[in-house]
Length: 112
Image 1: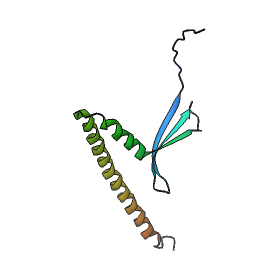
Image 2: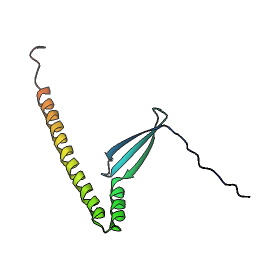
Image 3: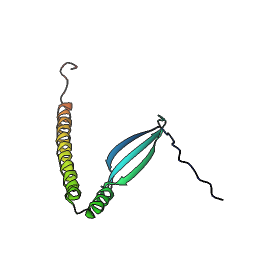
Image 4: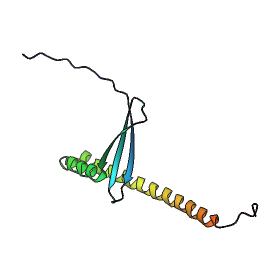
């Protein structure tokens, strides 16, 4: 016997946080943390960034329209823009770190 079923909506409060991480083997991951119902405990999922890019390329490879390859160009441009921003901030932080190390060796004249 087959009974018709109705659709229902299920509300599930989840907080989602995303991160980017390069592991000790040099593999670049997109890491997603799912926090159910404002819990401090999360479920973690990882996907290789390369897999995301490969899937993206495969998807748009089928779309030979200007909007298809245009998306690839726009995504590449955004990645380039963020690359420059990340490098600039990393350079700035590295400079601050090196300056702190340089001055850590100096004796504080007030405490002498």
